[in-house]
Image (cartoon, rainbow, N blue to C red):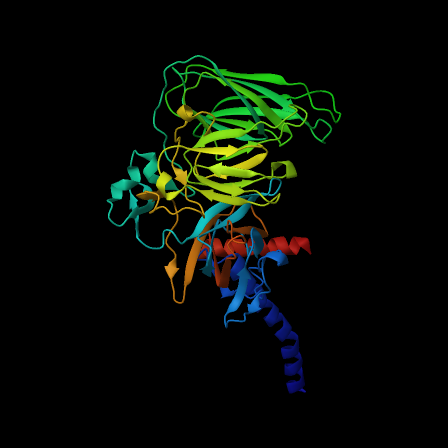
Length: 486
């Protein structure tokens, strides 16, 4: 009888002991006394902590691959995945073992604003910086310099010799002499960014604007913001029209006139959707550029014929596309040309090796083309200047382009073998989310038939360590909270 009673007690106690063990394991995950918890595994889609990348049309199925490795292959971008957060933590480090095939640059981002679907992107891999460069940190600045250059090359005053990647620099303190008001007939579509050197401490611009779609949902707003670095200097916004129909609005004007400015480079943002057009610009500025985006729109409803689009650029690489059949044409960038044969298709253009310095002209005889560049554009050659170093992009070849330093927080990945690398990215966890959403970007990967292979991962969550007393208090609070929920 006693043995039966003992067995009954054991049978009753075992589930409770198991439950206590599970609860203890969960507590150590949610509230590790060290403040650090680590998960790792093969990137085959089986982990509950980090999911495979999606959507399916841009990746293959995770698992065993035909050439003998286990993981997932990415062949288009962007792709997304998510990670479960095991508790209250302040930071996360994600490490991926990856292999790049014909893809020179990769970035990884964490979702910061679900409403705008904006990500905090960080450098993950650069083929251009993998050899011939030294990683240096000096006077609080991190980056890479050519092997034959001193660390001080990071501080070169010649902006044509420097690139940046996910980093900013301090612009020079420039100030121009006055000149008369000068006008430019244009047809710029949607949001644009202007970079301006003030004239005797002032910035004066006059814009003629037109709304080509007043029937769309939402307010028709055109806004301007003038900033210097992170400092907001001036802002102005207004509705385009109180009438909502499908006719273009009348052309209307907006003037920006700001005085008593310190020397430097100022950033004037025109914030609008692609149905708002800039039809004319007048300014007293001697040096002002647009970029890195320049969108020459169509002139339907404004002019009866298309006007050729011309600009001068200090960019080394541009990507052009058009969204209308009227924009199919042959464009030129310096002495090189590209024929836009299809809509919604990016076409890359680079400078000829004989034209690596100075300004080159861009021409689109029919207009109606959108440009993204690693530099800036000007509507007249004399206005062109470089307000900040060019950005390192997937199309960049910094050594061949005369670059001696790249300013970037990018840390050289750990080289493994057979072309595999271990790359890391660190993010602050804001709030108390249950999941973290990531995006991997590999610009141009589909057009060059490239791929990114990922075979394993690790996640490290961190927060300040707890003493045993603090840890027990956290456990008691969790038990009390669970009891109240019951």
